[in-house]
Length: 322
Image 1 (cartoon, rainbow, N blue to C red):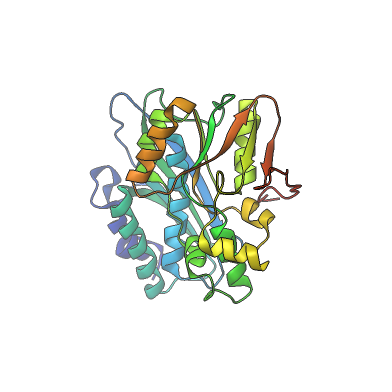
Image 2 (cartoon, rainbow, N blue to C red):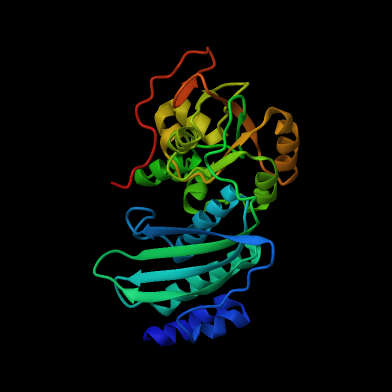
């Protein structure tokens, strides 16, 4: 198959018959933006050997590529609209691979209410590369940024962290059968799109956990001009059963759990008077939110304390591309 045959046979279906896409016969799409809304745009590139295993199943690559970008929309409080898909193949793709890849995308499109509005297919002298630019809608002036955290705001997580880091370690060390849920979270993230409206309504600042909890929370602290205290234990940050087991046995270190990234939960700065409403709202959506600390103007950066209220000396904070 050649480029245009691939597009016609596999990628046109991802436009879901939308008029503005013109069955991908043009090099651009013309999108309609409802009055009173702004467009939120985010891009992510995933490369084989760096962001997913070189032999990863095509359906898992597709899901992860789309979902990590959708997670950025959730952090801004935006609802998905469409996305642009760019793929660079190291060799001509097989029909079976394309069918599995596009089939997974189509299933996720239906789940998250988004469609493919275009993109590009190409070849590359290197590893497979998948890049997605996603567009979302948010009421005008209501987009949530990273720079709004205030002294005294609660640090709220939409779910447990460390699972994706554990899943990657398990794959590297041939222990995937011991930590199946963690491996699943690494391979197929769950973007918190259903919670976008809650983020938009109640959060002063937000970020999704892509590079690591400590790093991403640190980004919020830096641009907001505050620090954050995080507490572990019964009244603070709690881990999943698999991560807890891995920590207890030494298979995973606390530093890896807090800095590994790829969890795609959201970290929110929420005023104290809104905390109960936010927690109840996320629980109603099936999330497992938790208050893990407070933002403070008296400190800089992120400080982590164990159950005995002792500060942990953590060096690694998260993933860096260079």
